[in-house]
Structures are given as C-alpha cells and as structure tokens.
Length: 395
Ligand SMILES: NC(=O)c1ccc[n+]([C@@H]2O[C@H](COP(=O)([O-])OP(=O)(O)OC[C@H]3O[C@@H](n4cnc5c(N)ncnc54)[C@H](O)[C@@H]3O)[C@@H](O)[C@H]2O)c1
Ligand SMILES: [Zn+2]
Image (cartoon, rainbow, N blue to C red; front, side):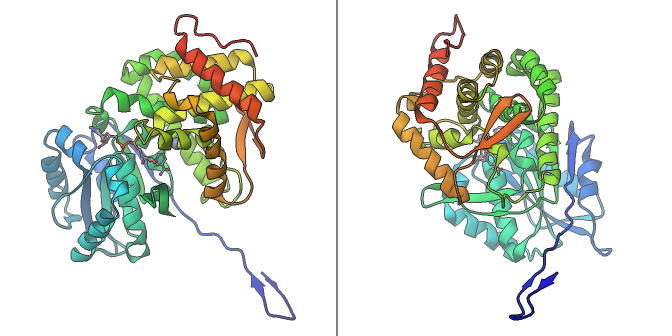
C-alpha cells in the first residue's frame, strides 16, 4: 500500500479469489444428476434454496423437462425448490424487453431469494445473459448456475463472466461482470437444437483455436465436415476444448473483467457485431462471427504475413462447418466500417483489435488500413460466391 504523506491519498491494490466451476455431463437431470446436485451446496447446514429458470423454446422442445426438473429437486434432501419453474422467452426477445428484467427481480423478491440462494438457468446465450444480469444485481449477486443449451452457450458465452440486456437499441448496453457459481455443459440439452443453431457455436471454437492453439486448429479443420453433420464424437470434444480455452483465458489471462484495452477473445468481432446489427439480427451471433473471423484472417494475411495457405484453410474450415461467409451487408462497406468506432466506444480508450501473424500468434493493432480491409472483405465475399473453386484470389 502506498500512502501519500501530504494529502493522505491511498492506492491499495487488492485481489479477490474466485472459483470457476465447469462441469461436463451427458444427462444432467438423469444419470449425471449428482454433478448438478453437488454444485448446489447447502450453506451453513441449511438446504440449498434453488429456483429454476428455463428458456421457453427449450422447455417446449425438451420433452418432460419441467417434470424432470421437479424430480431432480425432489430426489435430493439438501435441495429445496423456491417455487415453480420460471419460464422466459427464448432468443433476443428476452434481452430486448426491459420489463422482463423487472419481472425477474419481482419473482426473486417474492421468493425471498438471498445471496446464498441459487438460480439455475437453462437456455440459450440470450437467456443466460438476461437471467444472469438479473442475478448479478439482485442483492448484488445471487448464485448463478448456468446450463447452456446451445453450442454457442456451451463453447463460449456460458463460461464467460459477462451478463447483460440490450438497451437504447444497443446490444448489451446494460450489463455487469459477474462470475457464475457453476456452469454445467450437458450433451443431452443440445439434442433439440436446430441445425442452424448447432453450427453457430463452432465459429467461436475456430476463433479461440486461431488465437491460442494451432494444433487444435488443425484438428478442427480435419473434423469440420463431421461437426457440420452433427457427429457428436467430433462436436462434443470441440465444444469442450473451446469452453476450456475460454475458461483458461478468464482465469489465467490476467484481465477477466476487461480493464485493459485489448480484448483478444473478440477476434473478428468488430465486424461481427456490426453485421448482426446491420442485418437487424437476422444473422445469428455465431454466423456473424464466422464472417468476422474470415475477414480479419484474410486482412492478417494481406497485412501481417499470416500464411495465405492458412487463411484459405480458415475459410474452408468455416465453410465445411456449414457457415455461409457471405451476406448482403458485406456490400455496404462504409456502414460496416462504422463498426470500428462502435467497437472502440464500447470499451473506451483507443481502438484495439487483435490480428494474427500465424495461428497461435495474436498481436494487437490500433489502426486499420481501410483499403486493405476493404480488399479482405471483398475476398471473403468472393470466396463465398465461388463454391466450386473455393479459393482465395491472389493478394
Ligand atoms: N455473455 C457473453 O459473453 C456472450 C458471448 C457471445 C454471445 N452472447 C449473446 O448470446 C446470445 C446468442 O446466444 P445463442 O447463440 O445461444 O442463441 P439464442 O439464445 O438466441 O438461442 C437461439 C434460439 O434457439 C432456442 N434454443 C436454445 N437452445 C435450444 C435447445 N436446446 N432446443 C431448442 N431450442 C433452443 C432459443 O430459445 C432461441 O430461440 C446473443 O444475445 C449474444 O449477444 C453473449
Ligand atoms: Zn462472440
């Protein structure tokens, strides 16, 4: 601790220990239910009070889910359900209606949840974000257990520390950093996911592989078509590795709450966020990230020596997974470029983007060569339009 002798000013750094609990199960409400029961620890000898929140689409699609949740709670003495299973709209709708947030808080209050109570949320990334935010602000933090039901939720956002809803027509404008009490990635919950949403999580896997692990990137290229066909023996390990890398970044990367200017996990995201908004969210986050990763990879090859052959492999891998790398919004490059300033603004400070010298070799830049970026965007769109040749044009 440093104390200024004249004015009494004090600068006292401190650190708070967190534990991030990540579990993997095949059937979390069936054969593997002990795993979930164990994270819902009783507190000071009193049963764990647990309130379940479910994404409406998941509840409708997963047969008997409501009953299974009830049976789960009934089969453990140390678990005391706090009221009925609560249902919220699935998808972005929950994040776009601030009244839903108020309703959630009212339900917590009516059930007298306190800082030792658990909220178990089962749903896609949007539902996790919104319910997570409500738990972060109620009593300054209830214990949140996430059961992500999308590949994106399991591979990326579910293990993250960001919670939030949309406000002023801006994504995630209202939010909070809060570490979940636990995250359980369950394979069975993915069964009912649409094919479109199944693919979405794997663009984040490609992203994190390119940033952290070149050998795993090779593996993903090898498995991409099988993953695209929903072969679980290829898909589940990819989700697991992605979740582990995201968790490692948060717990060991030194900047879990994004105080510094770099946001390496947001590789490809400056354009992805803008494309999502430009498409009025008809593009899913994972789909936009696939295009964004493709663009920044080709840009890295044009500007920073990322091997051309590997850029080609990135585009092929994303296509093999089932992503389309083209969308009408790519024609509107000037509007897309506004995404650079919006990306900067969201974090504050100067523009900081992550680029790649090679797979596993990220670095930061603070400016963008717009003609080169324009060329990268055009090359990605062109690649996507020529499915037979599937080659990047010469630089
Ligand atoms: N917090 C973070 O770090 C972070 C990171 C990335 C994305 N996000 C956010 O996550 C959201 C996108 O999440 P997502 O891609 O998981 O999509 P989503 O939550 O929008 O879900 C897509 C659709 O599938 C439905 N669904 C989900 N799981 C299902 C299942 N198993 N069976 C049947 N239907 C199911 C949902 O109800 C929804 O209609 C966006 O709001 C994005 O901003 C947050
Ligand atoms: Zn993302």
